[in-house]
Image (tube, rainbow, N blue to C red; front, top):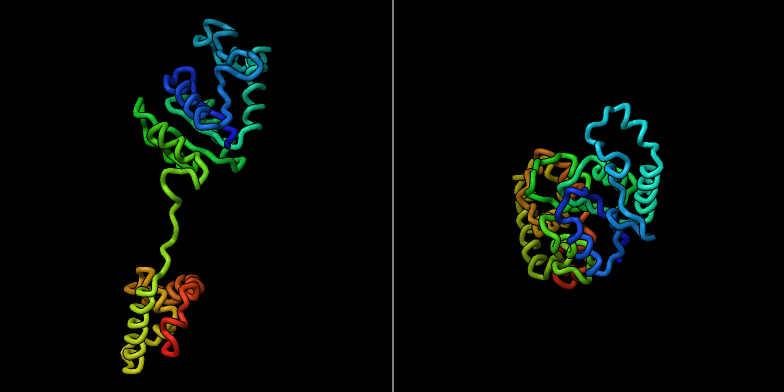
Length: 237
C-alpha cells in the first residue's frame, strides 16, 4: 500500500474524512493536523493570534520562529517519506507548493477536486489523476488487480479481423496491379495495410503524411503474428 501525503488546508472541511478513507483502504497517511509523535499540526495563530494583520517584513522574520521551523520540519520529513501525494481542495498556496514539489520528484500525484470555490486550473494537467469523489480517489489508488475498473488495454486483433484485413490487402493489390494507386502509396505494404485495417485506420489519408502513416502502422506489425497469422491466411499473405 501507498505512503500518502495529503496536502490540504485547515479550512478544508473534507480533509479529515479523506485521511480516514485512505487509512481504511489500508494506506499509511500523513495528516498535517495530527503529525506522528503526538505533535500538533502547525498553525500561524500559534505564533501570533493577529497573524492575518502582519506586514510582509513581519512574515519574513517570523518564518524563523521556532514553532514555524518545527512545523515545516514535520511536513518536509513526511513529504520525503511519501511516495504518493493527494491534494484535497479547497486549499491554499502551501498545499499547491507541496504538490508541485511532488510532481518535480516524479512521485504519483492526484487532486481531489471540489465544487467549493472551484476554478479551472491549466497546470493541474501535471498530475496523474483528477478525482471528483473520495470513492474514485480510493479506487484509483488500488493496485490494478484490485481496482473496480480493469486497466485499459490495447485491442487485440481476432481471427475475423485478420481475415477481413486480408480482403483489404487483396483489394489494395488489385488496385496496385491496375495502377490505380499513387506512387507514394507503395509505402503501404500488404502487411502494413492489414494492420491499418483492424486498428481502425484503414481510411487514413496516407497521401497527406505517407511516411508518418507507414511508420505508425509498422509499429503495430509484430502484434499480428501473435494471432497465428500464417495459419489463418497461409501462402496468400
